[in-house]
Image 1 (tube, one colour):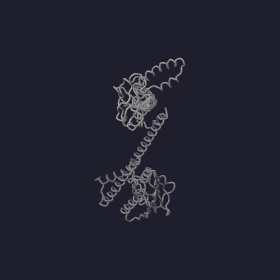
Image 2: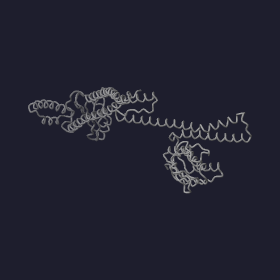
Image 3: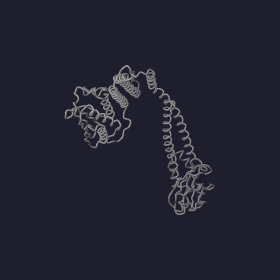
Length: 479
C-alpha cells in the first residue's frame, strides 16, 4: 500500500471517527431534548388530571359525561371568543374545569394525551368513555399500591411507541397519562439517516481530499527519492542532496546528507587503512620471502647454526605479521559503535587483565591500585583497550608498571624513558611507533585501537608524564 493511499485512508478514518462521535452526541442531545418536551407535557397533564380526578363532584361516570358535553360546548365558545380577542387566558382557565380524562385528539393521535386511573392490582378504576386502556406499565401497580412516587416509561401499543407517566395519588390509586411519540421517533429516525448520509459523504470527500493533499505533499519526497536513487546508481558518496522544500523534506535531506558524509568518511578511512596495512605488511613479508628463499636455495651452503637463526627469524617475522593482521582486524571492527553494552565493574575487568599480564611476564612487576568502579559498556572492547595499554607499558616502557583504577578513570604508568610532548598525539596514529623501538615487536596499532575503543564508549585517552619520569596514559570513561 502506497504512502499516498495510507494518508488518504487515514484522513477518511479520522473524518469517520469525528462524524461518529459528533453524530452520537447530536443524536443523543436531540433525543433527550425531544423526550424532555414530551415528559414535560405529560407531567403538566398529570397535574391537571390529578386535580380533576380528586374533585368529589366528578365521582361518577354520568356526571363526567355531562361535564364532558358541557366542556365541549364551552370549548367551542372559547374558540369563538379567542378568535375575537386573540388571547388564550380564559381558555386555559376553562380547560382546568374539564372532567377527568379530558377530550382526546384521536386514539394516541398527534399530541393528544390519554389518561386513566388504576388501583394497586393494575385494574382500571376510571377510563375515558369508549377508549381502550393504556398498555400496563412496569411498576404501575406497585406505585398505585404505595400511593406515591412516579415513573416514565416508553411502551408499545400495536407497534406504536407510547410515552407513559405513572403518578401515585393515594394508597391503592395511581394516575397513568400517556401520549404517542411516533412523531418523535420519526424525527429521530430521519435525523439518524441524515447523520449516516453525512458521515458517508464526509468519508468520501475526505478520501478524495486526502489523496489530493498527499499527492501534493509527497512531491518533495518523490524528488528526494529520485536524487537518492541517482546517487546510489552512480555510487557517488560525495554527492549531496539539495535541502529544499518544506521543513520535513529539508530535514530529511539534511539527514541523508549526513549519512552520505559518514559513509564517505568511512570509505576513506577504510581505503586509508588498506593502504597503510599494505605498506606496513610489505616489509615483514619481504623479510619472510628472503629467509624462505635462503633456506630453499640449494646453491647456498648453510650451517646448522645459520639454519637455526634463520628459522628463529622466520618465527619472529610470522609472529609480527600475525600481530599486525590481528591489529588491523581489531581496528576495522572497532570503527563500529558499541553493539553490546552491559553493567560491569571496571576494577574487576582491569584486575583480570593485570593477572594475565603477570602470568605471561612473571619477571615483570605490575602493581594494581583499584577502587570499585561500576559502569556500562562493552566488556570485550574495554578489556582489549586496557590490555593494549598494559602490554605497551611492559613492551616499550620499563618495570614496574603501575595501574590505577578509579570510577570513570584508568591510569597506566611505566618507568621507561617516556614520550616527548611533541610526539604524544602522533602516537595514536595507525602504524606509528616511537623512536628507538623499531627493533622491538609490535605493529604500531595498539594505541590507535585503544583510542578507538575508548571513543566508542564516549571517553577520551591522553598521554602524559608519570611521576617517576616514565609514560603515563590516562583513560577517562563515563562512570
